Length: 550
Image (cartoon, rainbow, N blue to C red; front, side, top):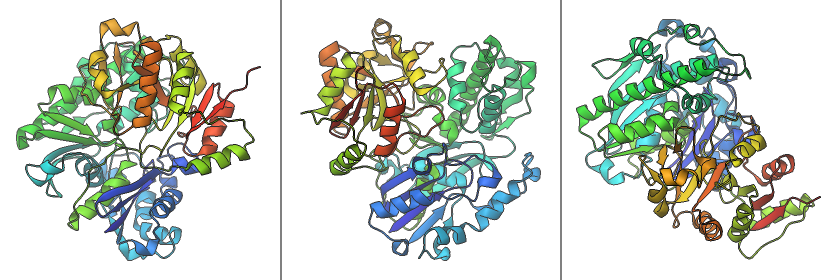
């Protein structure tokens, strides 16, 4: 069975292709259009479809629209209600519903040959839930015993939360929380209050929280609380009473950091109560997570430590982008397909050596083909160079996981500021370490290992903090990516070569992009980034491009 999944309505439009139960391709439209998040999450943009991503997914598998058995759309307008009836101030929300109703016709126009009758609407939170539970590496449990799933985001059709269990491809929903109560919208409101872009910059609030103390927690506990039935209440909060509203780019104060810390802590507490309620109902061993809130790696770590579940797994494309994959997996499961777990997040575009070399020649750049690009990169990093790393297929989701990365030496404290300058980012934001999976336990504790998708935080061992200061956040933690040598042999070889030169089994890893731009996806993007940012070496496929010395 061939199923093309589509996410389009809110933000991060994407497409995913599932063939015979396996995920063949998945990509976000921003990687093609070069517009961050594809489009803003406003009703006027809801008609825009991930046309380029969908066409690429089909082309990568040699398929035409007429070959598809189903197309899924991760929003079911039949479940929606007028915004004012749900207590939301969104006077143009009816446009979203209009566009959603017309989605089959829009898709048929974008993909000639597609029959609009082949388009299936999948409820938004069901798509999120499927992206987690059905993609997770627990297929044996899915057949016998079940896998629990918790979805939390800003909003779907009429809810912001789902707690359920998947068993034998079928979802049992135990609880949903109707709007206007929403932990995702609460965090978005705070993001905007702190001068950042809502539905985009929430990760900046999480970073800022580490600089503060949760001194507003008592008031937040009154306003944000769980219910005995597994739901929650989010009352209106007077943010100005705690810290003044910031304009974009305005300098934040300790009050703002304390407010971020307070909301972050309350979020963790509420999520923990929701997870414990779900486990108390099911007795489950494994919890899977999706929805934008599941990108909060600090909260994820609290759940992994204290929820009572043996394991917690987070969909790497936990935001709305992942609903294209989830909706396709859901329909495939409903049809009785035997599903194959995700083997990695490298589901996007890749390029052959011939194609890459053609791009380099077209750009008239001097390049070399060393005996081993991993050794060349390790040497540059050991000499304190910054490396743009472009290898294999691009990642699905917001994290750079060793395919489209900026790399640097972790032993130089100043490299944090240096990389933030390269990327044009705020200086309070951390960068992350990548480490071989079999070495992670020597350096990092508390969070789960392995952690291949950079979705948990870990304490850095005290005797390592001065050795790898560039990747240690102000609170002594790091958001690590563990590298399995069998799954990522080239990255593992580079890490091994770097340790041989420096004694450090860790390399700084951050996304290959600059502020406000999507992650680099194709060779031209990589060359443009290399040409505009102070990067010393571009490792693109087996080739090395060096910045000319004056």
